[in-house]
Length: 184
Image (cartoon, rainbow, N blue to C red):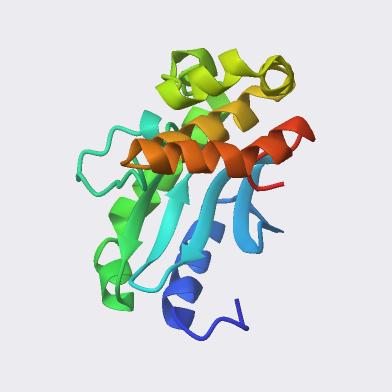
């Protein structure tokens, strides 16, 4: 965290708070990650407009204070609390500690977030057509892991215009045929 230019004070406060709850600290995805018996529980991360405390199983938290944010509509399990100042963190310290304690209890209980299966996501019609027209592309797409399939479907479906969806399929097809995911 020492190399970050922004959110230094906020990260220090969040780090101290999370460590006081008995979690182990490690670095994952270039971010401070806090684990319980090797399982991810909480992550600290910073953005241009805010820094955040991310709960991997945040969807299971009660959120009585209504402070949890779902980053995007496609995020299923994680929720974050956003901060724009150290004062925000100090003001919510007791609540944040309670949320961390709750998520630790959830982790210890073994409770899991029920995730939507890849098959439940709607395939864009343009992708369905491309797969129907190319047996090789269909076979390659079906051979991808569910997460990679979902990544392509969400990326393609995010385009507002049909011609953009078709263009994305054309650009992604070589990666699919190579057995690679969108971001591999």
